[in-house]
Length: 243
Image (cartoon, rainbow, N blue to C red; front, side, top):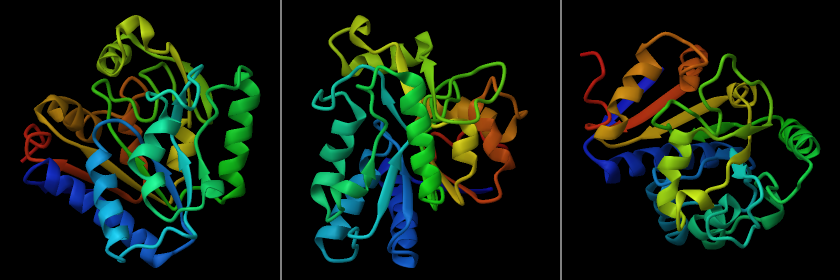
């Protein structure tokens, strides 16, 4: 496990983007596992800038996103399909056919989750998986639980997650209550994992996830067992790490 502490959010975003860019340069047809949420926005912004100045080529890249709200149409501006196109896909030369987000409009949860898991397997898994970190330790939408969910599945979102996401909706009542997400086992099969976190509000969970006991009650703690994890955090998020 490698921890990179950066000065601020901008520096965190640039360093995380550099790690992703290096993966694309090393293997132009790589499989990138991608994340949504406010934290990766700066990372994607840097990747778009580097594409625009000719430093990056996404023409052979394939992507698999971590998760999607169940029930939101893709043209809803809070769907993760919309988010990825708005923040990355529409601004680089990636082939739309090579981008993949779980289909939240499929009402058959078992069928959709099985399809998505098979798709990831057909790609040979993720060469690099980008992760954010929820305040309760969730990665993707793998919420604190009694056991680690292994494969792509439908999850009931916890109140803390709904509360954290309600700022993006008209009210908490409008936040979807379920999502399709890669399982912990699917995430752990990635060859490399990159975690980004910023802000004082993430300091407690960063310390707990990476220096506390490994438990499904803190889903991100399982990453302590992965052989190739890089954590990029700003000084505020790193403030409670052991010195």
